[in-house]
Length: 455
Image 1 (cartoon, rainbow, N blue to C red):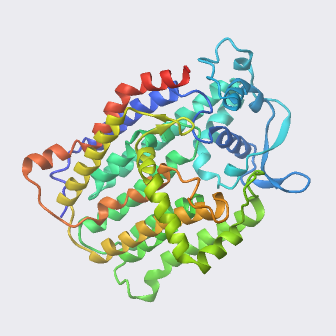
Image 2 (image 1 turned 30 degrees about the vertical axis):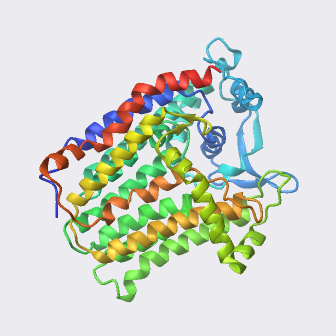
Image 3 (image 1 turned 90 degrees about the vertical axis):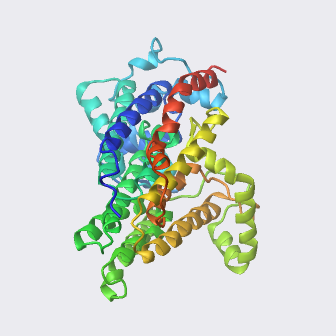
């Protein structure tokens, strides 16, 4: 069932305005480098701006990964780097400090930023444009940094509004997730994650159109969905189970050619992962714990029941934290909003699910079943990759998982719902579900961030 007549046409624009407002708060209030991995994302963007599109192994023994950056970049952020190392409050403002005047043009330096060196270049484009513009205009590095945050925000909002305008079913769940404060904080950071999330929404929006009309996807639609998914998978390979979705939208799923898009996505993801793993990726920094992907994988294969226990313990002990992080966590994953905001977020996502079921087409059971398998497979692969790569061998829990990793696959959940009918008042009320959390977050954000970084 198409819900064009029921859906308010203004939702994408209101969502865009709310996102810009909340994003600007994050842009202004969050100290430089206090978003997850923001320093290393900035290094990666600077490397790309110099024409080095791919990260590389560096050092005499090739045990580091990174690339070439402007030597002044690190010097410009010494007060914030020192504050993080010493666990002291960051400077309330860069104004008046000598680092505020540092400009581009320092000596070239080759440095290690191994956790972002493995990423492809395309989602860094807004930051690269800001850096190139800052260099051309003679701006300071700090001015350029905030310009990069702003361009990232505007790019993410543009994709977000486009996606919400294209959705035909499943839109309320997607809008609610896209406006969660965690997601918005990534839009306003020097990071690739903002576009990673919103491009995922664009792929879900294109998939919603044939579903709402209870028809097979056209070749052009499948091509677009496949291309967008390829961008996601190369950046975040654990999302690859979503490659099943184009196949489930095909006119004749049992025909041999229908699986080509899925096979192509798997091949591209595997090819990039193999390249990045052999030419760029290096082990994590020295640790007293023993890390070995080979030994970890051997343990999983020889004793899957033991690994099942690890999954169970991790979700039992840490799963609640993942949910909180998916809704609202900022800074170095240590800034949370008041507890009642998360209760409102749960209400919002519940209303969104009710509304998307109300407007669901009720058709294509193959897509719904395949989608459940794909989303569950994505969760399992995210957890397993983190266990292989980020957890000591034989550890009882999976380490390194962050709640925002699950936002992109969750954008497809609204497409998987069966159809049901809601009473008219509840259907009308649920249309506002996406705005509950961001509006309340905006009211509490300034005080929360100010108090956190004042001590």
